[in-house]
Length: 143
Image (cartoon, rainbow, N blue to C red; front, side, top):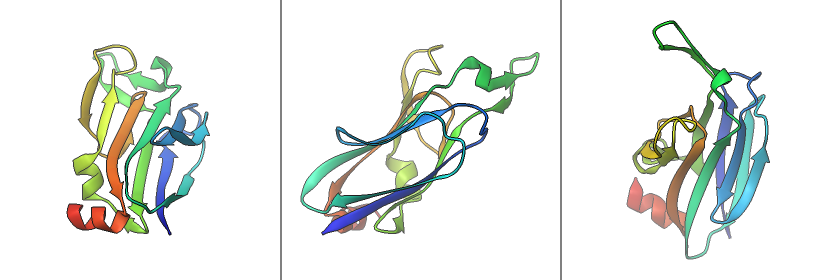
């Protein structure tokens, strides 16, 4: 028996060579150096008693990918967008917002911080969510 993990990964700027890695525990499931179009990610996870961590790692962003005006306000930015994260076709929506942690350092300009994740990765870093299997028990406990 397996549980399907799925999501959509896209970019706000296809010309910016932003990369994405998807990890489950210590196993790399996806390694794309340039997200230039929508990626429909899917992975079948064994649905046995276990603890897991799903991680999305954004890489390759540089200062050139962010445009600012004379006052330093961001007027255009290259970001990766993660939407429709689902376990067995049940979209996590608010669970993902409530439980995901975004760890980054503003692309090396500040100290490492951990914040909530609202679907958009604007800095190189990692979005992670921990869960357990069997997936339906975890979903029941968290919905």
